[in-house]
Image (cartoon, rainbow, N blue to C red; front, top):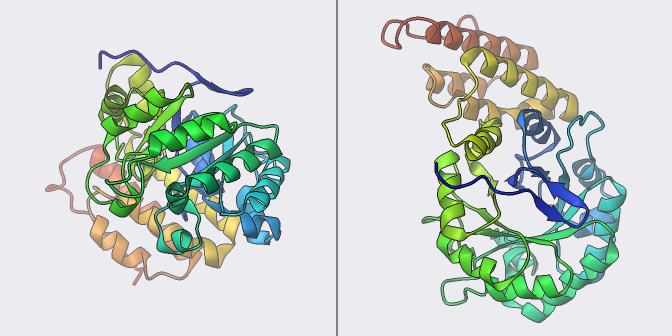
Length: 352
């Protein structure tokens, strides 16, 4: 990689030393996952999308989603992402987020999900620029911490108005823009168009972050080159790879390939993540929520299909713990000598 490392990004009084950011992902970027990503290294992490109405009603689950971990030991900033359609409610939710310890408030104009769009929030706000302006202004005025915006290219390819929305946001106090390189009507189909993000970068004097389909260091470098953006945001590429942001940072810093954890390190981090989910959610809910992460961690490993079939039907937290230790220990043994053909992995043992 011949391109220079992205410079630190300043948004108000918050500096992002390495602008490689964990995206807000419903059901994924919760506190246990954010802390794991931060332990490897990230420029900034963002919470799951939080409904402003639920935050203002002080829904207990919503407040838990907004909390900053007391165990955080890094200087990595945390943003709380809010979605809503009412300027006054968004302003109150932003104040609450600031009180809960957020470094940044991020506004969601990008969620394509029908339930959110039908509530006139998320990407639907890109179809109503006057309303979008009022919401952006009310939120930015309500807090003293920086406010950022995450959006898409537009509603559809006939309405690629992201540059106009970005300029509106800049004029109303927003300090950074993240653009997912798809329209709302694409959902997650097709390929993220990083080149279109350049038009947003050219329309404002703010830092711009490129998002969409960034699954490794080469994708990150290509996205930066095509978009002219100041950094990248990584979402689905981090599924089962909380170390990915560190890989991208190291590659952008040093221009060389970045390695993944070895099998023994992967085993340790999987067990750590699992225990943290049980502690955070409780044993029953934690086990249920952990399943998708455990399946992602197994991708590409010998015996993964059998592992997924078993872990998705186990209801005992201790049995899952034993299964994890056994499966990843055998994966470690396999990596330390021999080929997959030499050493088939059986994970069932006595667990049925």
